[in-house]
Image (cartoon, rainbow over the protein chains, first blue to last red):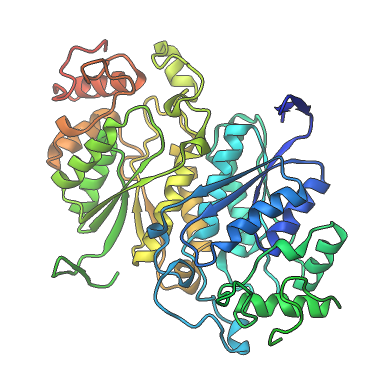
Length: 243
Length: 243
């Protein structure tokens, strides 16, 4: 966690790697990391997801929230083939409400967070960073197996077993999921408190022909409900969705 | 592990994903998996390693040993920047003998096996495979933190926590490292027993101008010593190295 030089200036802050999708959760996570005093290396993966618009949002968020660097890395989408998000079999992205709470979503991408955290770990170790931030959240309708505290803890343990830095004691990797136990409404309030511009984030899986959020997919519904519960209007979606 | 169709023919064998570098260890690992009755999906990653020749060897090995498919996947080498293998700082690849046994090699690539296993896991889950084979080996001069039994066990645990298949009980992922406790001489003997053509594998980090193994890098020395201990001559390197 030495002193880093950036554009001719010294940056004495410790480094952190932050997974940044372009959605609201990862934007707030980045803002938390910046607030904690980290020089943030934001990392966005492109892997054939349907909503490429997310990547443009990630770029804007990295600038607005104040990442030190932002890197967009392409991954071969065929590795993940089989998810509704990567062009797998056609499945409805708007599920009945009661199914959202009990099922693993069809938007589950095989081992996605394992892959993202593994690449973030490589990136962190190569740069002397020991803190890795991820916007994983287990509350509300998440349902993703790789968004649970037990998964994050298991990855942190792995990180310290499988790296030079972890083994030599040079540093201890920490996988930080500051939104894990937050409700979606709490995350919306954090966005406001931390000055995150929610209008530049992106959550929708199925934008319409004019590039507007559909208001109907799981992600839109969760987001709209969150803003409603926080007593706010979503600057991106408005309050027109089918909440 | 259902029946797979391949080129019009049914393949009733269960599928396995096998990490294949093109070196002798991964070739033998693939042969073990084939011998165990798996239809093998071999996976090779290209990530800016100096010895691109390995990839051509991986292609030949996949054919010779009998993988069902072989996929070569490119990874952004800048993710791993900092290793002697990915064009990091210039460091001697031929270390004094006494240092080989006690140090993490300079050829250590940050979190490499974490990344490779994570991608293999995504690939496996997307294809309904539950067995992942890796040629990790903790004996002799390995020294890599991500080649130890504790690391492999931790990854297996993670795999079953962070995937749909693991969580729903659809299947249990197994990370198989059949060479873990083998000496290099034993691996050479296994290659012979399993019919692996060692002459098409590749191990050298620093081939000479004519594309021949240097005989001096850690990898060449370990390989030459292994063949000598097994009472055999390396069909690739001969016995001219500085054993």
